[in-house]
Length: 528
Image 1 (cartoon, rainbow, N blue to C red):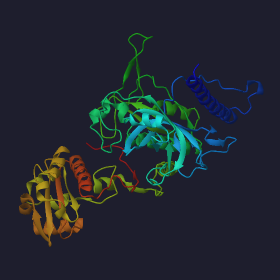
Image 2 (image 1 turned 135 degrees about the vertical axis):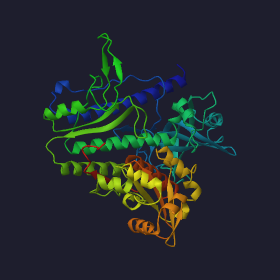
Image 3 (image 1 turned 120 degrees about the vertical axis):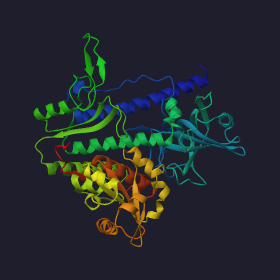
């Protein structure tokens, strides 16, 4: 064949050799861990791997002068290698040992910049971005190819690594750049992209779902999936250290009475019969406990044919575990250490144990929910006994009907205007959406009462002073009042509290602040 064909054949052989070495190392490592007593005659001497006639499906970096096995870089006889090594798309930050070091980079063109003849390319893969430089004077063929490149084309770039004159501290590879000696286009984009992958602004969700393959290239989506992987791995690492065993339970199962409807799958070999997808591994893990396995866990896939909720969808994953012969205190300590370990691995090192504990009755009394967010205040207070005999029929009617009257105290209440609390205001709309008729309010102005007309007319000065004593409200504070059935009042004030916590800047969703709490002493029955 031609010189180009022979060079391509040598390149494929080198790639195949690297992959064979990697797979051999993997199999030998697995064998030494799992099968130490395997007879020598069954020992695996070679892993046969079919060579791929097409380029790698994912981007990777590999030193041209070294062989990479199991995460380590072994320099060739010339001694050239990156200081910290390179493997699978990761160019380590830092200086190279010699200007002659070479790498081959496969990835997507993230950005192109023409700086008066010199072209700068950002080539991206899952591990990050590296800068590639081309010049018409140094390598004209590579530069000619680079001039035609567009965003999201897939390329293979080979050349030496050098230090950047102007480092970029915002990326791990910001100290180095690659001088492109050759550039091969592996795939072109022939149509207009639905949105820019490099943009920090997320497109509309409908557009993202329609073009999922492009959406998954975005940095935010890749960060989400990598974080999920890190969290899942942290769960497994901790539980295996605690002597749990992972057992995979069946997906196709008989229907069993649980909390939601089953997804059904027709059984082809049994006419008119159906399999049910598991809502949880509940029966299977109980079987394992009775069988004596003592500590079981599973990253379980669950299926429930129910309406969408904020924290639930028809198909979801849960960390499922079961323990035998352990006290309640032991289980709570185990769970605290598990959650703390996972959060630390996910980038939140300040998690403290043991967690706080709060009785169910206190949670409902102060927050109106059994899963309170303790990262900010805005507590609720039961005012039913104070307002049960006032002149406001809204309050007295609620108490006489078996309901309650509660108040939510907002310090520095001028931050919430009256128009927001009145009908069609954003706070009032949240209350109505939660099931109530709206909200009433009163303001403390130098120990004098201001607020909604029904409150000003129906609440006496003595009752007002008792409200201040119970709630601790002071000058300038706002008290939001809701009356009605107990469950409706709790839900309404919880929704209003969460809304005000975000709108008043009391809760930063992006902060690493945690307030973990056990809710204890749940009631066994609900009185109707």
